[in-house]
Length: 248
Image 1 (cartoon, rainbow, N blue to C red):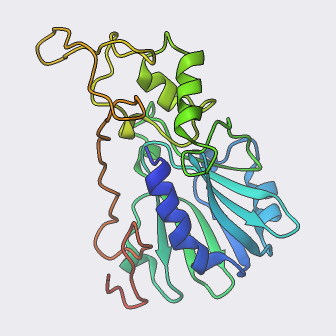
Image 2: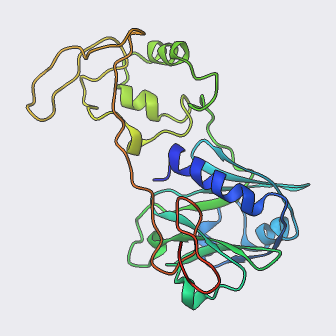
């Protein structure tokens, strides 16, 4: 699932491509991708609007529009954004299973793809897009408000929860999830000052080593950012391609 690091990079890559530019049209390839709005009202709300900002909101990618609603996109497990430069052909791009396309005024396209919309995967979690969707807003880890004291306060108020639950609950901390969790998240790994379970051996290893601030040093599990198939245009977490289909 795309989380804080991926969405931050997507937003940074999309901002120079979209801010100040208008959407000429919208194509909804898969109506099920829309949440809380039908295709026609979504197209009417977005078409002709100019993008004023691109940012991450928790686990969603947000595109702010002038004098209009905000486009919110949650990539879930398999959603991926692709950027097609003006003049790029669909045959060259080969975007897998596009579900939503936003056309910039000059013909460039932001295409969202999700293989989980395949009919052979009916139960898989699918990406969604909507207008002014409400995101459960906890503390954002990239803001000054997210301090050691703030994290300690969250743990103290939820001391019976596993530390993974505290970190991944979007009502408490916005943007983190299973991809960037603690390597040990068993029943003994609590938010309070207790030991954690050794899953490999099944034993109890006692309290972890702590730093000067009392917080246990943890190593996040890194994720490889998704790469589109050969020929698809891209942003920086993706790959970029010119109208002739040459990826860079």
